[in-house]
Amino acid sequence: MSHDGARIGAIGLGHWGRNIVRNLDMLGALAAMYDADPGTRAKFAEIYPNAHAAGSEEEILADRTIPAVMIATPAVTHGALVDLALDAGKHVFVEKPICLDAVEAERLSAKAAAAGRVLMVGHLLLYHPAFVALREAVGRGDLGELRYIYSNRLSLGRIRREENALWSFAPHDVSMILDLAGRLPETVSTSGGTYLSPTVADTTLSSLAFSDRLRAHIFVSWLHPYKDHRTVVIGTEAMAVFHDSVPGPEKLLLYRHKVGWDGEIPDIERAEAEPLPYDDDEPLMLECQHFLDCVATGARPRSNADEAIAVLSVLDACQQSLTTGGPVSVRVPAAASELSARAAP
Image 1: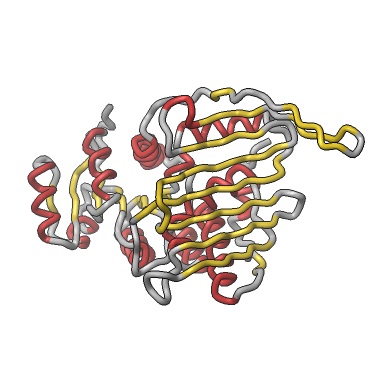
Image 2: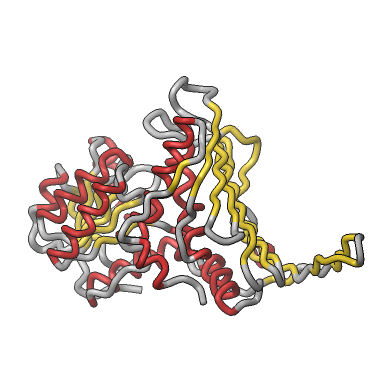
């Protein structure tokens, strides 16, 4: 697959940036790349000899033949780099989170809109074919009215010093939950544990309370004995499990269990798991292709800045709760209207 005429500069070639570069190269869109580490730059220059190995971020931003950049640097640098890229007239894809402050994110969103530039944020799981199939099932009413969502993102490793497990792992789960709910929670409560570094939480548990009876929780940890990336959605008519740690048809299952009462006795009718079909495309390839399409057509990205701001508002409230030890109301940004506009019917 190629994207004729697309020329993308990749900034950041680390753990995730290298995957972005691989997909851009496969799409025929990789024009230039840069990483702060000279050794990494030299290595990638050998792997992708047809792309320009830039000596600085500024070199890519100053190149007028490159209309767009994809940024995959440490989260603390995202806001400043997005700002510079927009100043240079570029369309911008930035890995999650868009930045570390919701007010700053709103400023960047307004700046991109005023300049007529695409600003897309890497919320990868919104492009995962299995999650897309899950959202479509919710939208069709297959699960009935949503009651409860929980999401686990657990593994051993990817330990950070500059950000805690909430900021490192939970953006994925927050974006999926908001996408399924179609609205922001009213309040959140987060607790956590610090075991390896005194100021960095290695595990966090966040509870989200929405205006109706919908509740959700998110458990993240990089101190877990095995990998478990699982989202469970409970509705009035059925239950679904998106288990991203397993392959094949077991990844997305629908359970049409019936739970009610026979007088004073709980009455449960168990049903066999039904695999829900989904496409077998690589999520990152689909996400990169979507960015290229938006740059080419001016279309609004699915994971646009408003969606990212809504996620950031929830993360901000979770961090406040983690710090203060009590429930926190979620600040409602202007982006909330965008979230509601694409809520599942």
